[in-house]
Amino acid sequence: MTTTAEQMKKRTDAKIRYAQVHLDALRTHSGRGSRDDFECASQEATLFHLVGAKDALLQELNIHLGCGLKASKVRNAASLKQALGGRVVPALDEIETLEADATHWLSLPTRLRHHFTHRGDVPRRFFIGPREHEVGVADPHDGSLRDRDVVEEMDEWITQMHDLVQKVRQSVDMA
Image (cartoon, rainbow, N blue to C red; front, side, top):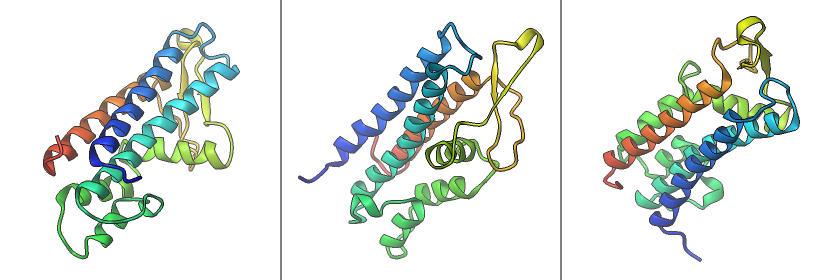
């Protein structure tokens, strides 16, 4: 069965919605900060779907741009650029830059997703005092603490992913 660009567009949009569903469940969880299975699973599921949205967007681009790669060969923007044989697509250049920039918002969720998929739990730090029910996330590479509640941060990442998807679609006439 051949997958169409419209099917992949729906998949990308679904991944963003799924991330939001898990984050909304986490936001209302009475055990926030408890490290219980629900909290941990919700954080991991949010990251899984958030990064999956970027992966699905790359699949959309593979089809829309006629790259011709098998789905299993679409690993990043560079793989699509290589398949295009020198054809310049600014959206792919932008995604490739974001993928390579360790300081960009997309980098930390990707590192976290890779970390929990292959190595262990999402690294967390628990705040004490007036923020005692908040949980911060730590970078798995250097252990540095993000000074924001993980729910707030993930909510921002979902918004940024949605915005990135819309921007890329508009730039290649997929909107």
